[in-house]
Image (cartoon, rainbow, N blue to C red):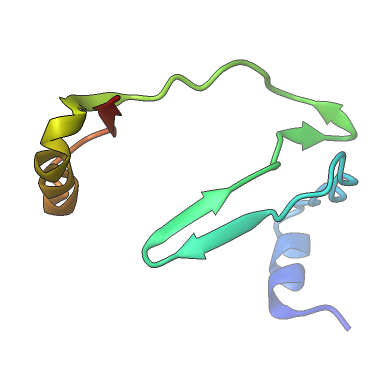
Length: 88
C-alpha cells in the first residue's frame, strides 16, 4: 500500500529514480552531535553519473600548533565560515 508521500509524488507526476547499487563498502552517514558526515553519495540518475568535479574547501583561518587553544576557541564561537586549520 502506497504511503502519503508516494501518493503526493504520483499526483504531481514525479517519479523517483531507483537507488544506485553501492560501488564500495561504506557507512552512508555518521551523525555526531549537530554534525552530519556524508560519505559515498554520488549524483547518479538513470544509472549514469550526472555531475563530477572537485569540491574546494573554504578555509576560514590558519593557526600554528602553539596557538591550538585559540583555534579551538574560534571553532567554539561558531563565527567561522569554513575550515580552521592547525599548521603542524
